[in-house]
Image 1 (cartoon, rainbow, N blue to C red):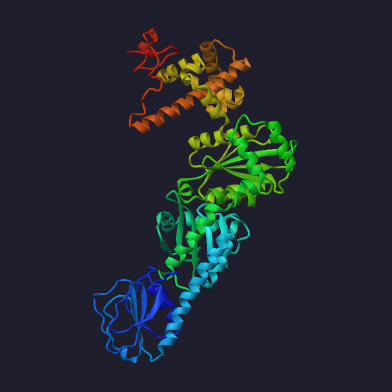
Image 2: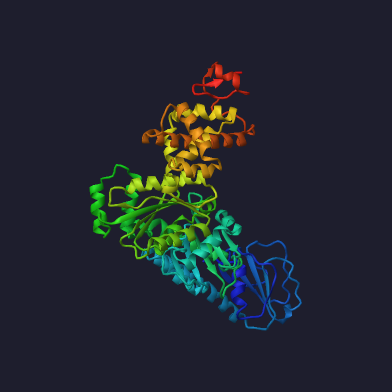
Length: 551
């Protein structure tokens, strides 16, 4: 095995005092030789020199390490790279044998790696064999934080297969995803130094790529050997062996280890899945049709997508919430909880998940709790809707529940094919814009009256008006609507219409702000025009029940 000048001198310095010039880090040297006068220098050799008349010229092969031995070289000027002086009168055979030992050490290590691969041994064995060369803590980890193999790594929790699976180790993942040095490391080619970030130790690393995309990282941390370019090519060589093992071996699979992942992945990917079969599969693993379940959709942010933390998030959730299954789906984490088997209360579950989501800058949508095996895909859909509508209506919040967005969702569904003005109560729409022109307060009076369950006293108090004033307005409202306001369906329709118009108002303002237009932009501008006589009483173009008045 070829070694670098810097690596050879690193080992020699353990036995001898030395002075060196700049040393190459590329593995180009294959064996030692004793220098003889008038001989042609050969590329890739380590030359041991004891000749007092030795003079180095610039005309020699590039890949040579010159090792000068003896006190006579104490004041020798190191003018070129790859020159080394041992300023002691040491028998040359001792130095020669020491260099041979270095080459033998690495040849044996190389042969042991080869033998290991021929036996199709584990990646863990490759790391263990490397202890004779690099005794520092070492780890192979996926970019999704799956720990493939490790040796003596100083982490309090390596019992789980994924870094970040517990509260202790999640802090490490959370710090890494916000570390710009860690993000930059995704695109590194060859070995590189990672400085650490306070929670993680510095390390020498090399990315292992597939189709030009880094998928694993091999690294060793602080220890006996330095975290510089001395052992860089050794780490790269080991990574090639690891890559071979990764490409030919069977890797860790969460789906194979945990049948629940397979079941729920089939549910998520196939809305028409055979639920009789699904039910039987779930029953076989103890998740019964008599149990109550809940689905939580956790949306990752851009920073998580860049740093591939989704696997760690799923494992953390499963380890934190008993009787749960977290599956990666469409770039997000989908968590199903068996509430009957879970040893935590509803409040404890909420506290753990919400605390994690907020601290990790994630967002989540909760489905309702449902009985049995036949609503899982619907629960996922409900959680997805909850998250989408919740983020739109309450963007400052990170946790969203279906009950809090149910009404906005209903209103949005009601206006998918028809605009709000064509869905809401016709006479109420007309009342609103006539009210704005004449300041008669009928519109808001009706809303307050209905919201207070048609209670005269409570409505008058809320509006800060006299009871007789309220009764007078109600008479005008009933006459305008041609209704006595006793029909429950009509009352429900009126209440929904109020919400529809509020929603339209919000959308109008949002569009106006976005486009830089005046907030007076008419939301119902697409209505057909009319020339009704009531237009004469309006100061500007305003909608009536059937269209836009033109003045």
